[in-house]
Length: 320
Image: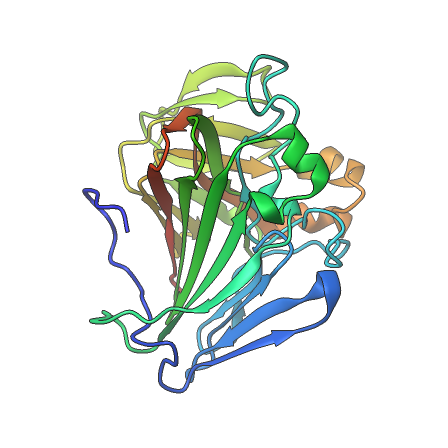
């Protein structure tokens, strides 16, 4: 793994068969997914298409923490609307020309490629015995012909999803396996399930500069420590100094999102009109029950030389 300062505690499983935990591969074809359940009832589901986390239940398995659209395509033919899609190697629309990602679709290829399940990891000296770690891999050979042509670079991705009691850790490792350097962006487009958007506040962004895509991509600074959602929100917060961004609901803590070697966070809610305009967003008023707080490295580019490795991700705590 990559050594770095201020790294949150790992939630590594102590062995390939954590005591009492169960891991199954269910479904067929593009709908195939890995389901892990702890003895206490907590569970996580990861669709092999996109390595997209489509369910994370905490509180003994009673509380679903992720929002997935009722019209989300879970057949492996298009990116999933909801859960935790993996954005790589470009965030948003790619540069129009002159960059290695310019021929890629919006948000790159990772969320629309089939990943390989690498199994459960064996890790010694785990901090938490009741945890299970799932590893997923993607490299150039796993891409479609179209994606390989659009991004003709050799790379290797390992995406680790670790489930623990009331916690979920998601970390990606990017390796340059070719002879030439490349640049990339990375984002975890997390859709959190909430009860009532009118009672939600996002904290931990005070003093941070952000690009407001709703206001013609103009730059502003978050003056208040509390961001409330009262309309369409699409902001890219850059170089955040605090490690943790929190979500409260009705004044009570709901989620802590701890950034791991990434400094940017996107906040997004489509609100009324945009929700209705998206064909795979349902129900139309589903915007009331979700909010996206998306950690990543999207302000500028990460660069890897031949053989170099980069790692980043998040640790989410459910606080119910």
